[in-house]
Image: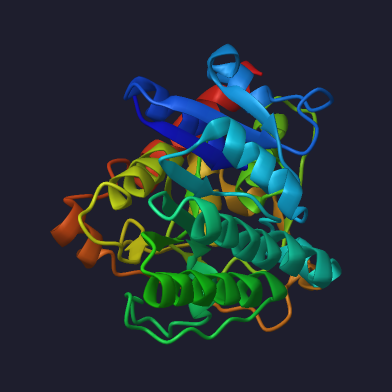
Length: 318
């Protein structure tokens, strides 16, 4: 039985990845800074909390990492931890950098020193590309980060490549574009739209305030994306991949689909507040996932309309 350690098991991706690996017969370990004090609602929602072996690990503490590796003895490590909000990264840039960059180098060092056969996956971000000017970005596209979050993700990407090339580790990065699910935290704009639309339909409020609805992103279904993570670590050689649907939609389109699916017009309920615009934000960040399709035989399964339907269904139940 293969053994996997998921750093960030409590998040959206970590929970779905744990579910996938358990279904494949893995022994799954998930890290937490304080497993005794932490709640894991996503693992509970998926009904797998009892099956995940939780270990204490503080990613800024190398001794803590060493203990977690000793307990888990992983064949595969998935680093999904770190601050994940672009907006919050402007408010807490140093905290964002530490949670992304320091975690990456500390985990890679533990693998290099003590577990050189362990395979490593790092969660990258399509935000690294910045504005793509309507041209879908692929693995050869230059990075042009426009936020502290994206800057940190670029540095982490380069560290993974450095350790792969310098120490012959099986280490790779999935450059993940936006992916959603009912487990997406409410601080993200997609869940904000979902929740507000339901409240408006129920008569509990009348307006939703958004920032720049012209931004265009590539939104997919999170369970599809964790399958790509796993597939990347099953290859003969470590390579980086853009993971996305290949189809861009504006935030206006996203809101329009949400409201239309519950029988409303978004124009009747959405207000634009320019104070919510992010500084130096890329308007279009589009993706070309053709390498993943060719080498991994991977492609996104759900359309944006289907993703939104799933999110609305679960939100309406809660």
